[in-house]
Image (cartoon, rainbow, N blue to C red):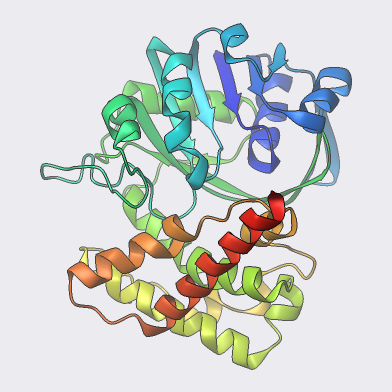
Length: 326
């Protein structure tokens, strides 16, 4: 399959290395030192006590060089997506599909939800993603934990499954094609019967663990051993459960927060994706992970006091990071 990875950081680098090493034609869109490393030395993925090395067919920061692809895997963080809508659309072949690997509530949430939908202004302010890509999109929730150690080198700390699904929850040929390509590359992939439930399940951790780790700058080993910080995470997670239930996804019978938010579930040296962004002075995904959640809650009259405070702090941190970057 002819594949493009748009954003070859931790997640994109992981996928690019595996897909290229299994015989696919893989191009990557990257920039800066990461791009130069991939061009000169290829990609190195450390996973399952081994290493996968692969050199993409093309590595570039010039979209006009890339062409059109059967599968465009987008691993850009949520704040970067609206400005990239034209570029992503231009990469997808006429019969191709875009797979969005995202945290939090995805921009396409209202598409395929069983009723007439519109874009989410908080995540897609001008509706450009919605207008250009919603019918060409497959969603992806990754439970694989990855970190860039140095340009072109990715460490997979937890090789969890990559859940994929259509926004409408249907089984389609394009979905099964992506599943087959992933499996051939040794990527653990699942198509859950209720893909949206999987989004909520991961959001429990994104909203609680990621946000608190970003604000405290603590790795999970230290964070999960502090009773007051664990209690705060559970408070946020309970608010997520309430909002999910109001939207028709009741997880209360299958989620035990004492098990989900526990030191046993998180490796000691793990830095969450949001903490990695903070340490690198990159924009953080506060709107996709908490902002849209609170919008849903307000629409339904649900109180989320802990999440609101954390969101306010994250927005302030995001502003500080933007100032520092300049």
